[in-house]
Image (cartoon, rainbow, N blue to C red):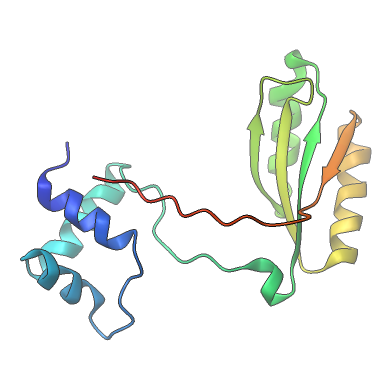
Length: 148
C-alpha cells in the first residue's frame, strides 16, 4: 500500500524529472526526504509492480521511424495462437485483444516506411486473417497524470 510519501514521489516523477546531476535529490528536497529514500522507495515500487515502467518516451516519428496500428479479425479460439506469432516480431511493441469484430490489435514500429511496409506484408502472410492498417492521420496528445 502506498503511504503519503510514496504518493508524493509518484506525483513528482509523473512530471518532468529535473535535468540536473542529482534529480532524485531535487525530488527529495521538494517532499522533505533525502535522495537515498527517494531511490529506495522508487525501487520498491518498481519491484512490487506499482511502477510498471520508468523511462523516457521518444517521439519515433521525429527520429525517422515509422509506426502504425493494425487490427485483425481472428476467430476467438485462435487469438492466443495468433498473438504468440505476433509477439515474435521485434517490431511489434504492443498487442491487445478487443471485444470487437476486429478483435486483435497491435502496434508496429520500424526504422522507415519501406521497412514497415515489408513487415506488414510478412505479418499479413503469416497470420492469414483479415487485417486493416490504421496509420496515424492526426495525433492528439493527452497527458495522463494520476492524482494521488
